View 1 (cartoon, rainbow, N blue to C red):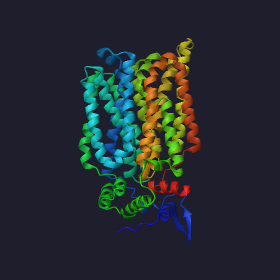
View 2: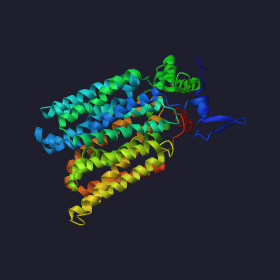
View 3: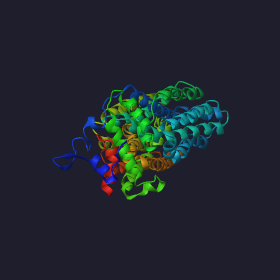
View 4: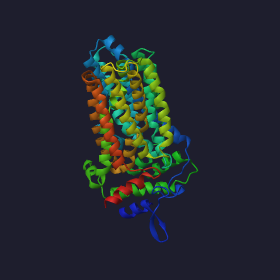
Length: 484
């Protein structure tokens, strides 16, 4: 039977190590203890497979996001849609995401991470089938709404699941796979959608969901969720599965159980717990980043890249294929750097790049409007779009990674639902109105995006903490300790 320490003792044991009779902060590991005492560093086959399942979900999310860009003209022609009707189809993905976001935290806490994945697959596959066989606009919209619902939950679920199954030394690297796979999904739609019919493309997009259905039989539940619901034996079995049969998981299991028990002593897991003073700063950080990232044009660039290329005088096919290559390179770079350089530096580079690239895209439309530098303005647009999507994939997954790191498991569900909901509301606004705004003032809308990206840079520089090299319990205990 594990002896549970009082809350303050658990917090101090996670924040400090014993040195010379005094409590000394461990700077070498960013507050962490010795690597072997808390977590095993091995990357096992099951850990890699579990990450692959989350990657399938992320890839499917990217497919849903990228679908509207290469198919806009053919869908409008085949079904006789107006610009407003297609804008509704494109943006209804965000409406579905809002609905999913509202329950994302609670459903994953109530059912568990794996059962939620099973449910998401049903919505994902049925959504694509509805689109593929749609003869009327409402069925098309219903299918995309189902995909949006899946995206709204999966954006939270994938980040949380990966963060909870990995060790501190690879958590950032594995979590960075999620935005990379999202962008690969977007890129896949861009490239394949340039060659196949929109109905065929929808059928192809069901493949990630079908693959995940098979792989779900072979992966474990999150150990931290098992600790939260009191299934200690299953927790240890899941850790052994993830770390290897010969791994010593006793210290890691004890740390997880002790911390979860300490949280239960002063929290009843109510929705209002997230508004406690100690969570105000992390809440402002995550919500602020998600809102500013969306108001900075993320959905506009993702949903309407093909239209932007054509409007700026560039071949849609050439632009989208080049964009896919750039996203792949920057995504791999971000995966490599996140555990070396840290979360904060990557966010600073990403937001600065988004700011500059939005401005450059706006400048290209400004020059085109007045017929200045007609030969140069399309190049500015191409560079701007490529740079924007490259910088986006570099930092897109970090807000949800920070969500999984900064909030303890007793309030993570409430925090996830709230942050996800607010972020998707702003994403919906941009997705729906972009088609009208670009007709109103093509240059001005990108300059506005640039201003929001600059605001995100300021937020990152002044408020975002560095969390690399520390276990989830250490990070979350430090938040609790600093607020006592």
